[in-house]
Image (cartoon, rainbow, N blue to C red; front, side):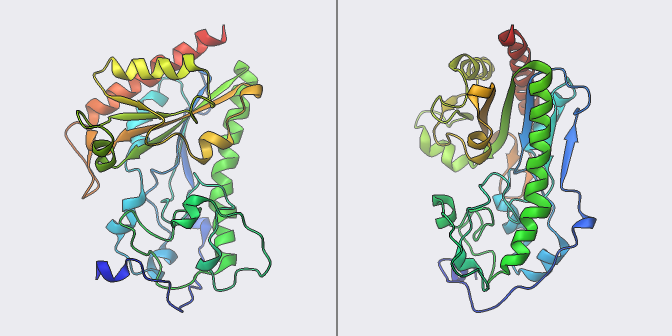
Length: 304
């Protein structure tokens, strides 16, 4: 059954469901009133909520749909937000819509009514099935066994994607106004198999993506790297991830807005196969939050 779904073209079946977004809370935010540091934490891929209408339409089991998500990342960094660092975390699963992609990363072949003559510049992620709307899950199995309604997907973008980015931009603007600069730490997780392949001696624990030193001053990324290394973790810079849409889109050094994508090895804190926390979850969270808090304090001094 699984192998039958791999590599198959979408069947001539049309999906015409419509989601009632009034029933769904798009994101959670923490400590966004009393902001003490020029740092905002973003967790765009930790959402576990699927619209009921979507689940009724697709045939893929929930556990397979969840393979695309960064499970529990928002919970890992939540204690840091209690220290005065604002946090925004996505509630909606990235298998439904991916807010860490450009909204133009749309594959015309996924739609039965894609507008004729509509010029879309497809990115590489779109071509491999991981655009703003994912065609496949982490095992490269087709999520849909038919074609989507282009208008319904535009509604996903309007009611979910745009809502998340509007709030993130508001937080950045507030921090920029209060402190004169802002740093966005975009928090993610990476499959342990990738971490093992990248290093022969010891798997990578964390990867820090700075668009190859373009998204923030070296002093900032060096501080975060050294802080995590002091906890005994192995850190990689820009490999296998140098930063995706949020890191690129919000990076504006001339306006003193800096970004960095933080990726953590899922094996540090969870059982990837069943999407459950492991015994090291609390320690990983404690170590990560200590580094995030130290980084936030460093940013205050950096401003001076």
